[in-house]
Image 1 (tube, one colour):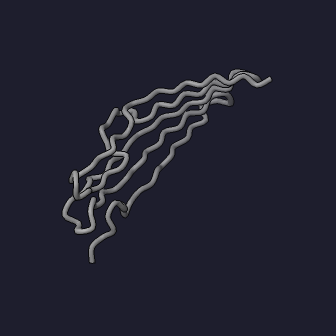
Image 2 (cartoon, helix red, strand yellow):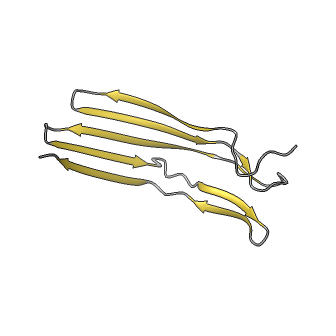
Image 3 (cartoon, helix red, strand yellow):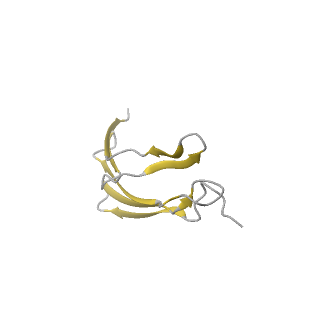
Length: 108
């Protein structure tokens, strides 16, 4: 009758896209992982987490395009994965802190 360990019942993402102009597009993503148990006996659990990511694209010309991604915008501490082992007990694999990526693309 226990729930399967390391398998959240709820997970997913919601995206909000805004095309500000013909050249500029902005996107916000809310990503959610619900709580789940770390071991088969269902005694230990991970609370889950929600993250916000932002993305923007600017098409400067037919040849030039600029992209930016801000991941984990709130710089939230979370586990990419969590489980339980008989040797170490609770085990958490930390997720990435706030990260900003920029891309410049030239097509010729």
